[in-house]
Length: 171
Image (cartoon, rainbow, N blue to C red; front, side, top):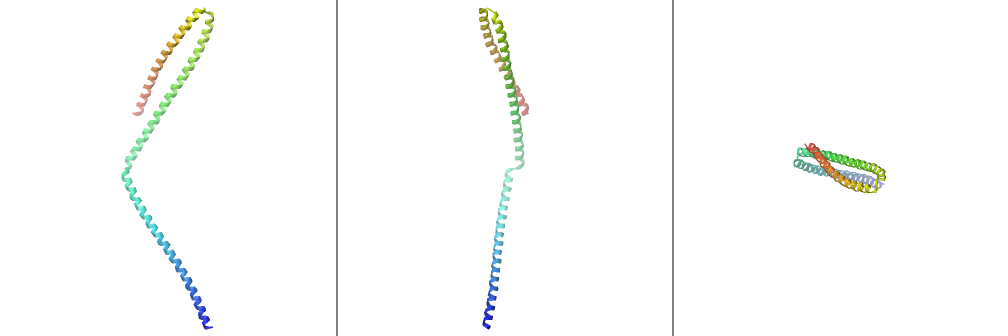
């Protein structure tokens, strides 16, 4: 009986010792994790300090005031380019619109003249009709040449006007 009590006491003590060993093992694992965390924080601090040094060097190389001035100048040039492009587009649109109107006007005049010519042509003798057709064809070719010359002059005037606008925008 005495030996059974001694044996039971030893079993209880050994269980307590095993529980204490598990507690010690858990504490050692916790300490190990804290040490790993400390090492990771130290590495992060090192990396951040290196990044700060690199950023200082880049900042010194970049020269922020000059970069800001360059960006403002670039912005002004882009605005000028937009204004110039808008002016050119407006000029082209107005020129194309006026040409369309001129073409439609010429077509209407031709219709009216052909109607009038048709009525009077029936009343004229054949020889006079042939002479008028020949003369009118000659006049049409001459008038077309004159119109081309006048239109060329108008194009130059428009071009000079656009150049003057461009010079005003630049100044």
